[in-house]
Image (cartoon, rainbow, N blue to C red; front, side, top):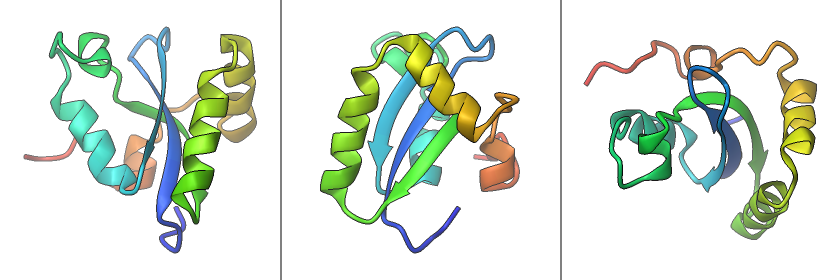
Length: 107
């Protein structure tokens, strides 16, 4: 992950890889931890479906670019999102440990 960028668009999934969630953040590590900490919380989408496994991310230098890209991806059908993930991460490996080090985090 290039730390020179300030904003990230990311796609998360659940353990079974049946749910896809697209988000934007200025701190990818902390945002994924927030999703992980919220697992099982019924009031949020990612909590309800236990979505905290990173499959895809891309960096942007400006928030406007990142928000536009997030909206673009959110508007896609599932197949197109799957194609994007496969181009970046062909095996659909969970990238949490690879990107952030130890996973799950110790808190």
